[in-house]
Length: 242
Image 1 (cartoon, rainbow, N blue to C red):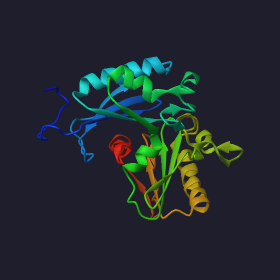
Image 2: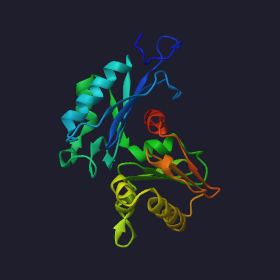
Image 3: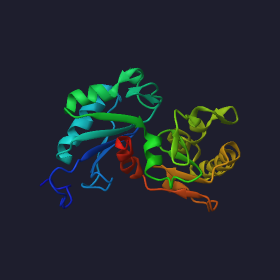
Image 4: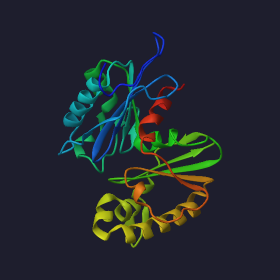
C-alpha cells in the first residue's frame, strides 16, 4: 500500500476516478470512489516551468503512479475547455491552445479522460444545486463558474472582463497583483469585486475558492462562502455523471 493511500474497503469492481487539478503553481491529484469520496490523500507537485504540455503531462503521470489504481480520469484545467480541447491558457503556455488534452493524456495513462475548466470543477464540489450560484477562484489567476439550478453555464470567463481602472478581474486580483499591492489593498479590491459580481449576476450564493482565498480577512456577506481548495479535486466526479 502506498504511504498516501487511505484504508480502501470498497468492494471489487468499484470505479476509481483519478482527479487532477492543474494550477499555475501546483498540480494536484487524488483518487475518488464512485460517490466522489476520497480514497487517497491529495498529492501535489510544483507546476513545471515553463508550464508546457509535455512537462505537465509528465507531472500528472508521476502523480498517477503515486496514487495507485484507477479506471478513469477527470482533469481541471485553468482555461476554456471544449470537448477535451484546451482553448485558452493565460497562466500556462501558448502551446496549450488547441491541444486535445483529453486524448493526449488518455493515450499516456491508458484510461478514459475527461477535462473541464478548473473553476467549473471547483463549483461542482461546492454548489447546493439551488438557484443562481457563482463560483470564483483566487489563485495564480481568477477563475469563474456560474450554475443555475445546478446546471453549468458553459465557458464563463469573468476573469478577463473589465473590473476597474481599465483592468480585468484577473489583473486586479491575481497572484501578481496580490504580491504587488499587498494584502490590505488586495482585500479592498476583493470586497469591491464581490459587490460588482452580485450586481452583475444577482446570485443567491457566491463561493470563493482557490489558494489565495485564505488571505481574505474581512467579514463576508451572508450569501458568500469560502470553500476548501480540495473542492477542485472532489468536483471531478461530476464529469462522469450522465
